[in-house]
Length: 105
Image (cartoon, rainbow, N blue to C red):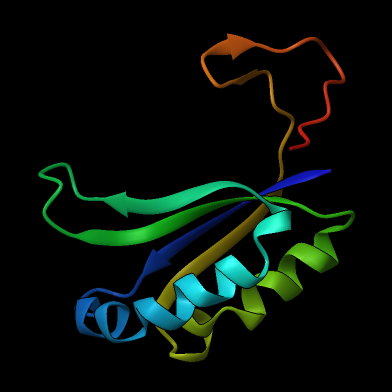
């Protein structure tokens, strides 16, 4: 059951993101079997990261909340806001999906 996690950084916390990015990526690699996709949210000029998006395959909202709570970025206090929302894919990888499609590797 996919969940979308949106994170928004506190203003002026680019240095925190830069310092913690390696640990964050290690955490994601260690949990790659749960990841549908993800990446940084950029400014319009694409000159800095202002947050992130994770598409996560877990069974419950509580598991999605626990996932982001365990992310090294969270421990730094870097996030101004975090949203965890259940996601129903309709389009993926440049194609429309049949209703009820389950995204699995």
